[in-house]
Each structure stands twice: as C-alpha cells, then as structure tokens.
Image (cartoon, rainbow, N blue to C red; front, top):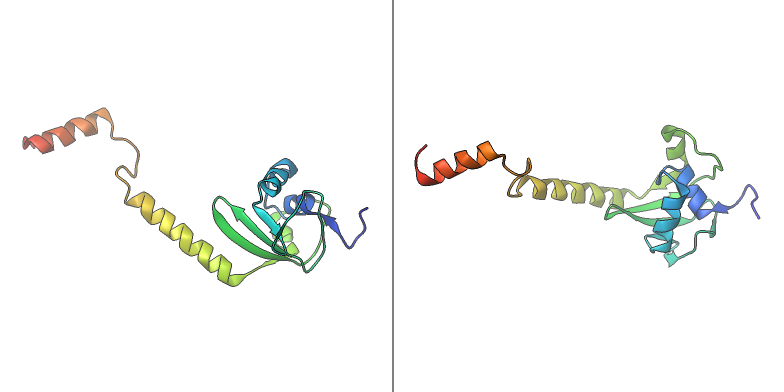
Length: 130
C-alpha cells in the first residue's frame, strides 16, 4: 500500500541514485548491506522520512537519514535533497578512500605490469649494464 508517507526501500534507494537499477538495490538489501534503523530488512520494507539507513557500497560506509520521498528518479542534484548524510561517517569514508589510493600507489606496479621493453631495461639495470 503506497501512500505519500511511505515508500519501498529498494525504490527509494534507486530514486536517491545510490543504485543504477532497482535490481542492484534489491541485491544489496538481500546481502545485508543495507540496514534500516540498525535492522536487516527485506526489499519491500516501507521507509518514511526520519528513518536512518546504513549502507555499505564498494566497501565504504554510508549513514544517511531519509529527508523526503520521491517515487520518480530525478537528476542527481534533486536526488541529494532526499537524504542527509552523517558528517562523521562521510569523513571516515573519505579517509578510507585516501588510504585505498595510497595503497594503490605503493603497489609493486602502480601503472600495471611492465611492458617487454620495460622488463628488458629492468634486467639491464640489475646486471649493471645501464
């Protein structure tokens, strides 16, 4: 039963542009990556303004409070008006992104595997022929 006060969770996540399709939203809900007010729920769970959602997307945490409901998918600037994000969790997420970037930079081959030419130059350098 859909009235103006509640909305299906999967549909809201899609309308708020957290997921590209409702099917992706449903999959994340089923896997337990979306909690409503701290509880694991089903796709058909009706949410209302004021509910707190805990999301895990790409191993990054989100904690958002539902501000409004919209049954249509609107442009991103309008979609951001549907929720308010917890500042502490957003700061933690940004910190995690920086750590992930730093770990990629310090990887053995940050630009990918060496080419055949690069490998030959490395071998020359190791042999002292450079």
